[in-house]
Image 1 (cartoon, rainbow, N blue to C red):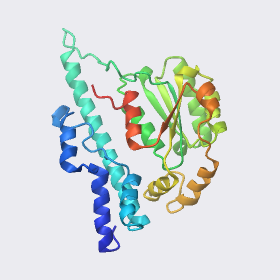
Image 2 (cartoon, one colour; image 1 turned 45 degrees about the horizontal axis):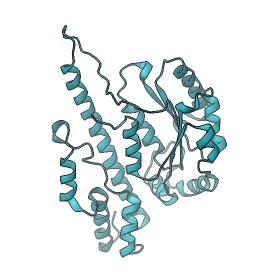
Image 3 (cartoon, rainbow, N blue to C red; image 1 turned 30 degrees about the horizontal axis):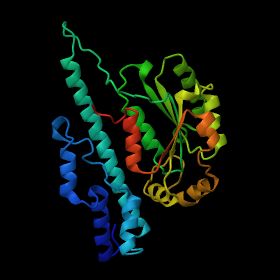
Image 4 (cartoon, one colour; image 1 turned 180 degrees about the horizontal axis):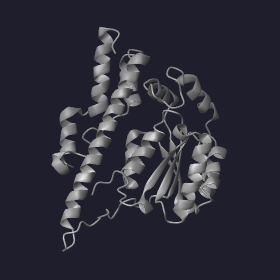
Length: 295
């Protein structure tokens, strides 16, 4: 990953900043130890302290251009590794605590009782539409929100509809069916995962979902920079729609068409509009909606 000795120093520095921030390893460990959970592990033990783009900008202020595009892609891969590891650890710990809590609150006859967290999915809208450029981590957000919702039966289960994976027509048909199931109480909710760069794109999903009540809907804008999205896609070899090595022109094309959430969308179309511009803001929203609230 390093083309010369100088770059090695910058890459190591960037990875350390990404993982621990400017306060350093000891400060990070002290902060983590104040919020330990099952097994003495912190919920955010593997979460990056800074984003990749933030760390690269910091390094480039001191040494402009020292980290080349291929090396930046490696740093993005490291960031993704940290996030995926943290998500996996969270899922295991969530299951462990759920078993402990269920055992403690089992009925007198010894049968297991399904225990739901009191703040599970608190204030979470039932119909969530994502928007953002390719590489803005829409799919990661959608998967984490639906896979860690703590649902134990189909009527409360959330589903993730990814247009890249399913294809446009299949996804639209699926979203329409799920929208009807939600209104009938058969499914808990849905996350619609698509670039949705124009207001027309986003309004289409509300129609497909059978015009749900506005207060039950939300638009989430994963607002990553163009350069950050290009680097993330460059680091992937398995993107379902973007061939490896061809991400930049595609992403820049989407960026030219991108329409940020409009006043009409905020006041009339959606019950709420959330703009997420950093990894920590994404975590905060996930926790707010129950996916990463560990209580």
